[in-house]
Length: 233
Image 1 (cartoon, one colour):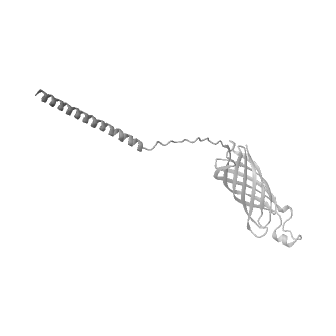
Image 2 (image 1 turned 90 degrees about the vertical axis):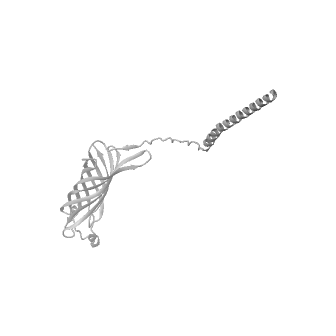
Image 3 (image 1 turned 180 degrees about the vertical axis):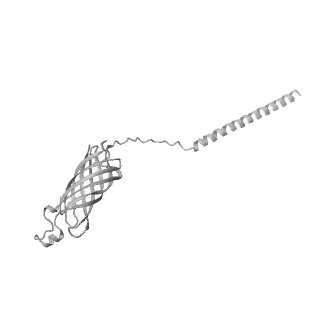
C-alpha cells in the first residue's frame, strides 16, 4: 500500500515537472517571437540617407555705381547723315541733370559739315546749291530722357558694370543752309557706368525739321549715330 502511494506521488510529481517545463518553453517562445519580428522589421527598414551639404563660397563682384552727384558733362563723336546730303563726321558736347533715378534732362550741341547732294555730284563742279559756309551744320537741343531698361553688363566672373537702355525726346534748333529751323529730336541710347564718376554711352538720334533747300517745306530726317564719355560731378 505504501509503495502504491509513493508511486502515485512520484507520478504526480513527474506530471507537475512536465507541465512546468511546457509552460516555460511556451513562455520562451512567446518572448522570442516579438524579438524575431523586431529584428525582421529592423532588417527591412532602409538605411538612413546621408545628406551632403555643398561648400558654397559666395562670389565677390565689383560693381560700379553712379556717384552721388546729379550732374554730368561729356563729349561725343560719330556720324551724321543729313537728308539729301551725304554722311559726315560729327562731334559735340553734352550736359545732363539726373532729376531722379529714372528721369534726366539733357542738353546737346553738335556740329558737322554737309557734303554734296546727288544732284551736285551728277552735275559736276560747276553746279553748287550751297556755299561752303552754308554747308556748316550745327544744332542744339534740350531732351528729356527715361531709363526704361536698367541692368548690368558682366565682363568677367568678378567684374560687372551697371547699365541702362534709355529713350530721349525733345526740341531744339538747327542752323543749316542759311536757315534756322525748329527741330524735334527723338532717339535711344545705351549707357554703361565704368566707374562711379565715368560713363560711356552710344546714342541714336533722329533730328527732324522742315527745310526749303531742295523742295519747298520738306520734312527732313537727319540721322545721328554717336558715342561718347561723360563725367559726373
